[in-house]
Image (tube, rainbow, N blue to C red; front, side, top):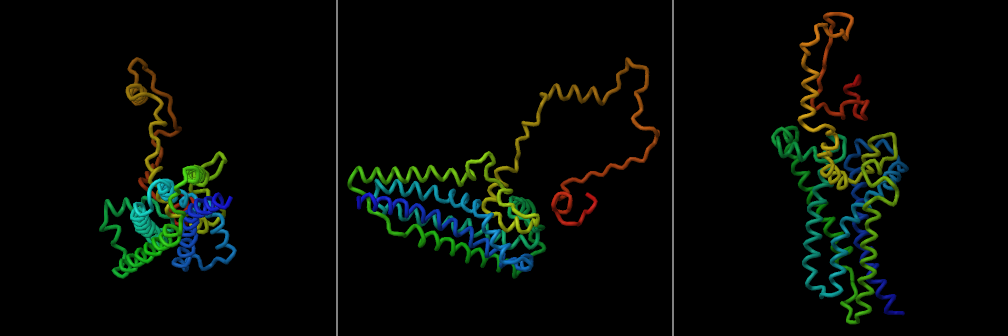
Amino acid sequence: MAKQRNTFKYTVGKFLAWLGVATGIGIVMKLVFIMLNYSIYGVYGVADYLRVLWYGLPMDLCVAAYLTVIPALILIARQFVDWKWFKPIARIYCIVIGVVLGWIFAADDMLYGYWEFKLDTTPIFYFTTSPGAAMASIEWWQYIVGLLLWGVMGLGIYAAMWWGAARLKAAPTALNVVSRWRRVGWLLLMTAALFLPIRGGVTVSTMNLSSAYFSTDARLNHAAVNPVFSLLYSATHSGGDLESFTYYDTNEALRIFNDLMSVDASHNEAPAPLLRTERPDVYIILLESFSAHLMPSLGGEEIAVKL
């Protein structure tokens, strides 16, 4: 019984350490986001901040579950190979996560004050297509602040994952076959259970950006959204399924279009008029790439107030 309790303690404890630290990073970064954008969020109270953390927790768990998959696989492999072979892998993983997540959180914190929407692929698009125009409005000292923020956040995330989870004491590789496979069984069960927070529960709706929305105030909803999830969601859903809107094949669509645009010579009668006046004043306004963030009817700022 003692050995079984130790097996449960080491396997479950180590696994939950990874999941807990990754979730804690998302929670702490929300508070940092609010503090760095205090000029926007200073008007809210403690109750609002607590609701931001509470309603954003499922999304933080979703991101944490994604980050825990690789450590879980390392823990499973460790039951058969000595830890010294996986220690460098775990350290590299923590470094990569620190660099990537540090950049995402830092970029979200720095850009929100300008654009007031959560980080998605829009900044990446501008930085890759027109880097000069994208950086034209940024002062030199903001470059330095951004780099420092990235470094501090990246180092903090790395330290939290390495010292809070990767270096935690783990049970040695079991010599007993039954004990070893018992640990593997627990780890496989818990790794499979990560599907629930990744999916967002067992309901019909899966995890999406609106899962963290709880208020009529868009800024509070933005604070609850995890920027890592926001960026990944935008990257994987930006293309859209255009083929689902194709009803006719190309030749049939062109035939129907040409019939609509041409006048049948066999008909001598003029087509029925659509308007009462022969020369009406018709104005067509085409808004190409007009931002929804400028239209209050779509949840944006009150700039284009009549749209």
